[in-house]
Length: 323
View (cartoon, helix red, strand yellow):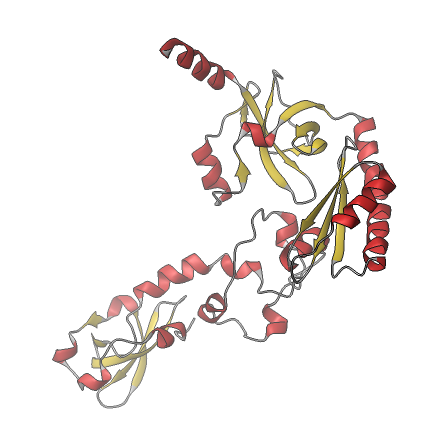
């Protein structure tokens, strides 16, 4: 029994994988292959997934392979993508490599994209005729032709069984309906953002994690919804990028009303600037001055001023700490 287990473990170690980006939602997955070398240039590949034959793009071919084997460990992959769910590490779910794409494969993919637009228009027409409360956002026709995936938005659950039957009868293939949100819509259809760059969710983000108003407040971004909202109408994903740094820097600052001592005397903290790490101190004589964090000494509340002014700051006052 142990011998069989050792054999299976050895076979698993000897398997070769390649990292591929595929599908309209830019999924990432590891695919088993038997090639002895990986091209160092931009390469399309034909892969087999649970949805059928698909066209994908090799990822990391310049630095991530050794003798045809993808060399990054699962831990390194998760650290690189900073997301525990960014990559599908399950061989059974990701699929297998079929072949390097030919010119005909790439041409067929372009042809299917054009067909998918026509199929989407037909699906929209059927949905209107059936008065279904749904918005057809996009369509994807997989390379093998086995399936058409329609992405739609709706405020609630929709009974689309009759719609699926009608579309399947029209195109004589399997139909899949996938409900998405506004951020997924931006990932599918997004263009240029206000920063002048392509939408992050479309360009490189894999999983769209939540963004909240606390991040905007901490970074002292304008709270005008028109300026902090992205293509999707939600808070911009880029507010997450510096949130960890802001949070760590904010922890170093003393809370408001904390008693401190500087070279100019004793006082209490009335404000703080996160990025510059400056603390605004109000002295006993009423004067105020900005002091560097490394130039102040934290005092016990009982050693200085009126205790009613030296209590810990509330969460709200912390959220209003300056940049």
